[in-house]
Image 1 (tube, rainbow, N blue to C red):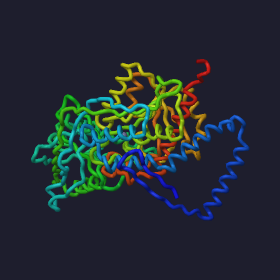
Image 2 (cartoon, helix red, strand yellow):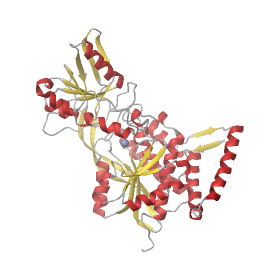
Image 3 (cartoon, rainbow, N blue to C red):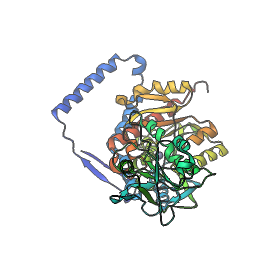
Image 4 (tube, rainbow, N blue to C red):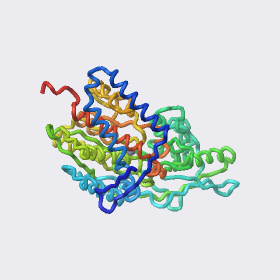
Length: 494
Ligand SMILES: [Zn+2]
């Protein structure tokens, strides 16, 4: 029986019990694996066998994460008891207090808040987007306002629809066709790409820049096919950026099936019109915080190894994968060191950034302060790609640093981490790299399901697998452990 509880957060303790009945086949598999491991270790060259201390520590890190499941329960607490936490909202402020309470509860060496002013946008009433003037009377579509969208008139807008697949197509059609219409960006997520981040990147300009591009040619509103890989009808929000020199027009994202329906109806019924009603609202900037916790280094306390995720989420979801997973991964590194009694040489700092989703103010503020105070960051790692099974890391660092990281790959059990890409980081730590030249690392989990949930109401705790989340946490803790122990370069000369 495995038993665990979350004792550090008063009143939030959870206890689960899992009974495991090993089958004969499982016993055989375990024995075979042990024999194989022994045979392999005898076959290894001496320099690899010499790494047994590291192997033991890495095994302890993975064992701790997989057996306690503590970060999984912490994530459940964040998702279910705090929930959505868009910048400026009450939920975001509760998340800040939650994170501080969790890290203070663990008794990390130092826990503090860093003030940052954040944008404050509210969605308002549930969106209404429907096809009208059709045989069916009207057809309701599943839609979410794109984050940052201005509202429609209080009575809504109704207009003819022009279907396009790119920003360029809007320009080609020109004012003659676009003026007075609602532009429907119908570019689909490219299902042929294996790394889904590239599929997302290919389609996201329609969400980010599409509204202003349409407004430039006189459009009165925009709908897009959600930038997402799922085939259900969950719409996906996300941010947009209005250009300064054109009118701000309302914009909404349609679920996959709703987008299909709109295409189908427009094909058969040319008199169809689209009705949109959004009641979103912009408020003045609000005071919020990055939440920071650290374990002080024993030898080089003034050199910081940063591990971060973002605490804010979109308003329509629990932000379980985006980025509750990164939040607990960051806390988990400190917690794992604490639980295993690993006293780091450098200061290990967990930074839970505010406002990644619609402004990046937390990351920008953090970098500003780091530059002003001259704090030295050895390296910064971000987890913001979901709580899925680990695959690799990407690092923006010198080639010799990449080679050093690659030499550690055999230490990650069962190829949990099997590659180190050149180039990587995260949105929140990008400003730190630009301001101070700090090298950055991004955690890369399996990406196949990430954009099914990303920015959608379906990004909930139930979609997170405990083992996958904890394997990610263990992989990140392992890399941080090795960086702390060996540095980025040989330190012999120093
Ligand atoms: Zn994120």
